[in-house]
Image (cartoon, rainbow, N blue to C red; front, side, top):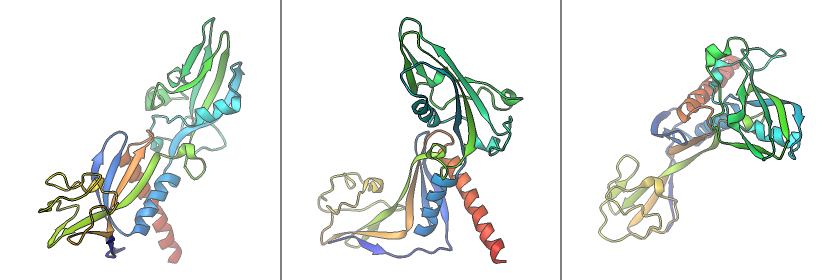
Length: 275
């Protein structure tokens, strides 16, 4: 016994419904072809703009951490600012394309820990009125440790960019989609929209998908343990569960919105080129 694949996708149909939303995970129910959905996934990871530390100017560093290593740690700190409010960097630094932080810490006799909370926002022009006090997404990320009488002093310049250039601009740590299974038991069919399946015998499932009256389809890992002469699993290439785990620049809904704008822009370029 094995999974039965159904090929029912129609590239002309596209639907997107929000299924679950939180600070750390957003899920959508998507109806389209795998090619379109994977295109959206690639755009989210590679071409959705965010703001990230891009340049570090080190004035003093007597800690044991090398400047290059510290710069790499700084570069992966998510900044809590809407990237749609800034422009991509140009030749000149100005208040419309750059966010600046400063870090100046010195340990006395006792060693100290330096966290992202110690970064000070240095507004350019009217940025304080426009953006408020810009902060890292998390204040308790450990940056480095200073030993006795060690010090560090630097400036951090944050710019707008995309994940295709560097991973620090990627808006999501994880972005994936999976097919949704359908279960058929004798003459009954259960899927995402109809989760009721009346079973007259126990079903072997390590994920306990069938333990409740309504089947918990999201838990199914397609392990095939439940398959027998009466119970079958179907997969179609039309319905998918699309998951985004944001890094903090934008929430999942905003990331999807921006990715669809990029897709629309690219599609328009193709249309204009053909005309």
